[in-house]
Image (tube, rainbow, N blue to C red; front, side, top):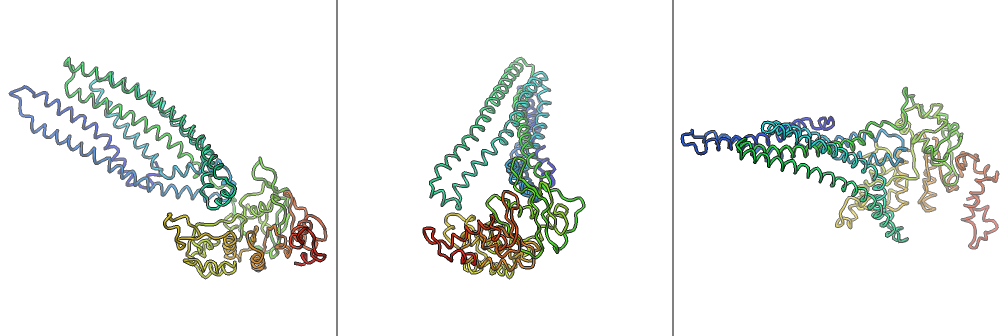
Length: 612
């Protein structure tokens, strides 16, 4: 309610007034009808009775005005409600994603329960005024109910008590149903997420080639339909329960109304009530039961919306995931280097250790390379340096200052990176590069300069609209998709260079992290990019992660990780001489370039490959 009124105070107040008016008009109309009928029947057959024309005309006009208001006011209320919903949804989305922005790490985004909660929170934020509207409907129903209860009690207090007593189980059962429905939506969240996964794969341009090559379409469609059937079965059970309960409640309501109608007709025939009383009784019973039904439904809807909105509140109130320092320390200019001190890390208590007691020093101005098999912990260490996670044990020190003692935003402003799983934004080419440093948005000189250094300027300049070309076909219909000016798709290697251009925008940062920056590039492009990266690494700390050992051989320090532990460290020549894991990996890679077909290498092939 607070969110709705903060977002649209004038519209919210006007909607509340119109809600009260909609509640009062039917009651007024019922009383006006009674007065008209009683006035007509009281003068019928009396020859000397005064003319009732003027009074009846006044009552008729009032009744007509009530009818006009009953037709117009709900339309105004509907507009006010829609406008309040639009404004509240805008604010709710802003507040929701402002809260999501405060999640500075990535662990929550890897938690399926958080993803389910976030999805439900977005649904609630899409129409937050539904909750306020449900509460307003409760207010309207309560006012209408009170008016008709008072009206019916004038005619028959006993029957009024019977109608109210019949409403008690309806309220309790409807609230129970709303709880069950909210629980069902939470329960089927993982099922619907898997269904969406399969649907996204079947419609994905990235997956289309492999799905068709391997004939996976029918298999994925079958799994998608199976998940949909499982979700539908749960929904069906809930719907059947609701039909049975609401059908029984409707039968009870009809029985009560029928019994009341028989009673009032008999009473009128015996002269105990007037014709106007009959009219009032019928209108009051119908209005009372309608108000009760609406009130029960509104209460259940409000209850359901509040339960769903609880996910929104949970996300908004969750706070940061990484602890913020009570007394933030300034992050000094990097002069000495970064120390990784006895760092242990695992992604959760159920996961094995990704890093085990790692001790490493990254000197300022030196290039440190991390090598090792997949899963050895290389990318995990890079993520810890960016403080996407905090170490489970140990510490990472920036010139002696623990990263946990400085604001995470300040740390990341001092880091440049090319991540292994870089993003491909559905933006223009210029904006895609500018994502590396938002200060470069609109600065074509900086953007083009970064693209030139990444070797992608020629490709982007030749696009249909140059750097303004969208690197996606997402936003156009079928008829427009054939026009390349609407958007284009880049190859994997071209996207790799766009990601490198983002890094070049941040080339003056004190620490540069390059996680597989040459992946997806052909040998010539790899050599060219490697030379350019060597230039931007010069004079600042850098961490280079690569499976291609030819890219790291000139590093000042090469570190070999195996199963989360550092097993070797040294320069390229020293590690080759040690004949350890690095030497074996290097020899295997070099042999792939020097062996003749059939596995027979030239006598001098290994020495030549090693020199290269």
